[in-house]
Image 1 (cartoon, rainbow, N blue to C red):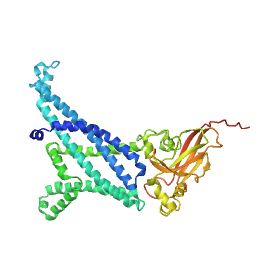
Image 2: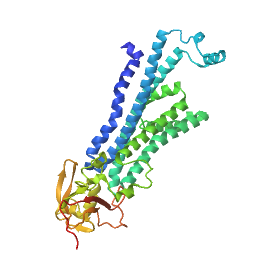
Image 3: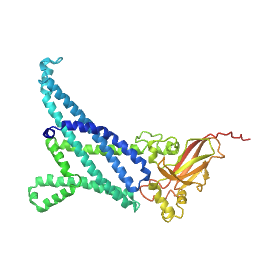
Image 4: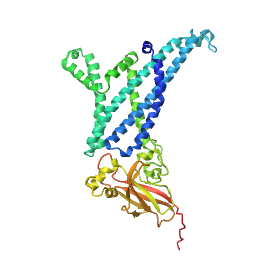
Length: 436
């Protein structure tokens, strides 16, 4: 046990080896499980899952990258120890082929010996392992507080139709506390108090600094983080360490946000300039077709039909009920689910369906539960009789009664109405009569 306290390299190697693969797998597991229940979540749970999964994904990838570097450093360190065991005298400068006297002298002055490299590599690996632990504690602490603030702010804002605004204000206040107060303490203590000695003896000034320090202690777990941070910072280059730590946190947040955006969207690239999302919305989209499944489909409350190719007399159309999107509008239609005389009919009022400009009656759409899609909604048939073979379009409009000048019921909505154009290749299995 005493040996383990003095030499932790074996434990570091074991932990790194076991953890690295799990960290690279965690984001995919999280995304997959959240996607399965995404359309079931309330506003608060959606906010919590979005923030939580972004931070956890960024942290997982960041820590996995650090563990890779740590594992490489430890492997290099092990190799150096073995090399020193076999060749205890190190470099034999009298037998260095290809080196003239000037280059040999230059390398003797600049190349460190094995003992120095071993010591520096050991210091790097141990320091990196400690930084990994510190980053994990800091991000988890900050993430937990951020999720609580976001959920509470969103719940309050949703009552007034300003969910996104409230979340933005709550996040701004939190960041002001996390960043602003430590900076203020630094200016008061490190700059003013160190330059104006009489301020140190002022009870008011000292009490103010102590009070701000207590508030700053909520920003991160100081008893767990500061011993590691101050030890490393005081034994390395303080400014470089602080910059590296700050950049690490920024990279973790950026990677997590980018990975979450890639999970939700077809692409995060800005290169599709000639065929952007708005143009594709009016064309073919595989999410509309149940026989073309993709991981993105579970995150989209889009209408669905069975297939792009149609040869029968009807198309089966599924209109999903997405509570996060639909409930506010339905409450306006029917004065709440408790007071609605017919809740299914209330859902029917949310949609209009037409094919090639010909309206389809919503009265025949019935409630449905699709366990394969993990959605509930309305299901009905769109008649294809009287249509010529070829490419046809089914147009589905969500909240068709809304006008363009109407304001959204909540600022989390980007638009008051949505239009889905579903293309089908109609090729009937029977002969069509020729027009005379």
